[in-house]
Image (cartoon, rainbow, N blue to C red; front, side):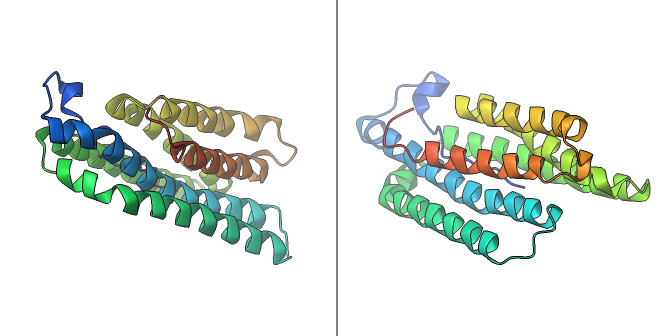
Length: 206
């Protein structure tokens, strides 16, 4: 899963100790908000994925939970898309700055490592016939990748999101009646991502 609060989340020259020009400085808050909106779109989609996994693990056969999950994900995605479109011109203004390019490179590296780790986890656990542990293991990988993102983008909510996912991945297989096959962990992961997406859309500078 890409958690992607985008590499535009903190594209300011001031973060690198360089004074921005007036036009760039005026664009910084809007560009940051646009970057957070991109992340919220990913949170909407991948939060839905985790909740649909929870639905499958719960062996639910009704269509109502699926429709509700898709509907909420759609509303969150569209809300984030509207915020992004409103801030896109400011993001374009700063896109070619050295700081913005550096952040995008770091984001892509972290995201690539996440996907590689996820693929290795799936292959190894399948080879060991431990497929039931794939879900908590992937949740752990996703949670861990939020920690460097929090540092790179200087965005504390990433750290909280990662901590919740890591704690959930480690604990729910031990305390849930269904163990690693319990839908509880996936449900917590999905709700956590949706809450992170909603928080990112708050109309304040962070």
